[in-house]
Image (cartoon, rainbow, N blue to C red; front, side, top):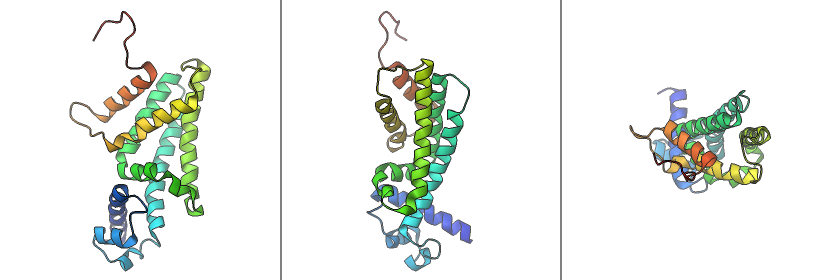
Amino acid sequence: MGYPDRRQEILDGAARLLAQRGITGCTVRGIAEDVGILAGSLYYHFDSKDAIVEEIVAGYLTQLADRCAEVATTRTDGRTRLQALVAASLEVCHANADASDIYQANRGYFTRDERFAKIRLLAAQVQQSWNDVIEAGIREGAFRGDIDKRVFHRYLRDAVFLSSRWFTPTAQYLLPDLAADTARIFLDGFTRAPGEPAP
């Protein structure tokens, strides 16, 4: 197995283990054992556990930041942009479920060290895209202005990024279905209007 393959194998194995046990619950030795190599061999590829964590999480957040920025600059109405933002975020999150879980469960860990400056920057870019979409929708009159936008953002963010912990697509209900329903719940609610016929 070549160098790139071994490196990716370490990252994939480490992501699974870190998602299961948390960053502080894992060691370099534990990651090496899980991948089936000696700890000394792992250091040939990465200088520390934090280097592994950084590469996993930064790779995920780079994809997420790029997709969110693309949606946020799309010339559509506020509702369509928010629906697209939910769909894009869910797609990236579920494609990188372990990395997403690592980041969501250990957010405080990335505030401690200058090593994680890139992760903090990428996370800020993602948040800015969400804020831009929500604020533009409020200005356009697509969204209500009487609800704190930070509260709306945090509820919707958690609904999207924690869904990888419980949602498994089936032939009858795919990821786009979850994206559509998530957007409808937050934009339209779960109750029928008075007099609205049942489906």
